[in-house]
Image (cartoon, rainbow, N blue to C red; front, side, top):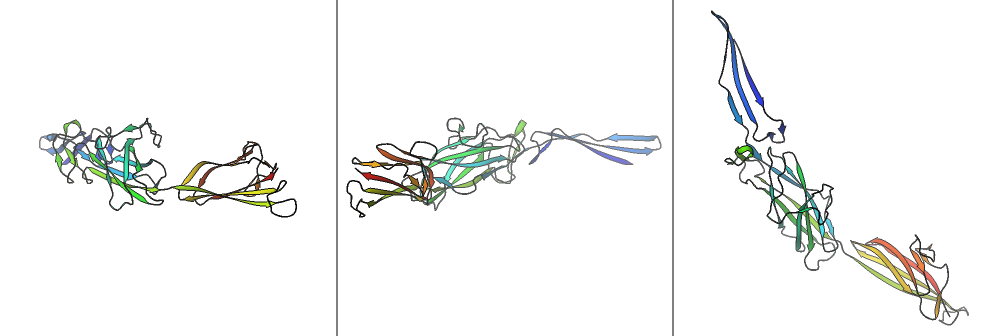
Length: 312
């Protein structure tokens, strides 16, 4: 006598197994020989509808602390539905004890257009404690946390926050059942995550300050160093950026005082000649001032601008 067992699955498998609401059906058959000849018999059919497992996962997408140098900066997280049914998640932020300064959380958003970067006015705002759209099984949402510093923290100080995601259907101990609240009316079963996930992100203050020290060396017509008519004045502007941050669009301007004239083709930056006309090298001169566009400079950078004037 031989027997067989048949199983039928309505949908493919996902991270947590068969999709929630799927119907699994099974029946057995037996074939046999008897005095009356070859015969067979079938069992009753068993039908099971798969419960939904609730199991979110959350990870930080930042390689390290995110620099906070102005009024706001952005942390990025990946929120993944590793369960077997669609699920929306409530999002909230919690401060982490031991931070150097207090953060002001300005917004939580999701990456609505999927370009991987925060787009103000485009990405969907999720108020604290509100829910995301439903996330399909094996799918993810990129979540942004936008925050600024409260008070006046010092360069290099850090603050951490925790992003918490909790399943709208429910949370609890692993294995707990929520009757009838899963997909297609099946039970929802809390997964190993407890129906919640969290991840930390860190902001670090990256401030920068600019200082300029101006010095002059005089060479008079008599071989001395007196500021008399006809004397040349070599001016040096030592520009330095301190701190761990970066300044942008830095422009140094120095006047040509009344009673002097700029000596043509004497402008240099770190010993490299700059043209006197406005072009791509960043230097320019007119009758009133000397200007050098230094662009973006990181903390710890210094530049030296040198040019000559002649006393009339």
